[in-house]
Image (cartoon, helix red, strand yellow):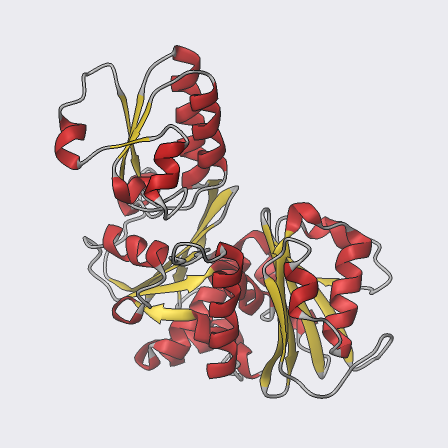
Length: 377
């Protein structure tokens, strides 16, 4: 049984074709530039050439592509965008127009002159993945499922902070069911507010397999828990230190006991250590993180845990994990099946097992030898 997993980050998109008949280390994988980085590079080339740009397609991740769009406008360039593409940068189209982006309909876009550089936005390009693998005689035939992870701020109403809206969603999911796989959704069950996930599902319309979407950081944390070194302690702090966001969970015997999310660029080792310590002992407060321009914090576990504690482990994953190198918290750097960059893909597999029970046994047998699922560890 084959499952295609794609973890779409800020710097890279990490791709795993998992075959349950093989050892996980033998799965085919790619770590390539993320869609937003690809758009960024093409936008920068158009800026250097002095050409106008049209953005079409779907709502996707912003960050680097948004910064390149801002640079294009600052350089005096013209930037057109259809509404779905423009929402990659902000849900408020009036605001984007005030910043210089010209919002056009599909019909208006089709009438723009040939000198306009046309860039199609999408987070998931199965045709590109299919072409890349085909060069090595690997075909995406007879897939049992496709699982994709993206970071989704959600569609915040006008006047509502994106940071607050995002963390309110995280808190609701934790309170509803304190398990990592509660951040994963079969395509038909994606909440209406998660517009980026829904756009990814739309871009996968030609995929002949069940589709699952998940938030990137919970996927990475779930994957990190497959590292045998992450299984031992009774309770654990697990943090995904991503390129743009850091999300940490306090995990206990019944699941998630607390969490926080902050912007990685605003953290250093001392600040992250403090956040982890206060998450562990239950004193971290939502306002403390939000007022520091992070997203927020939530404590749902009642028992405090203090360092040092032999029954309390700290596990770190993510592309910026070296921030915690040499930390007094003595973190364990998880590398599930020998590759930290594919942790999110392995986490996606655990979510497929949880959300698609018919596929659970082959997945769990291939990942854990039929042992307890990671979300119960």
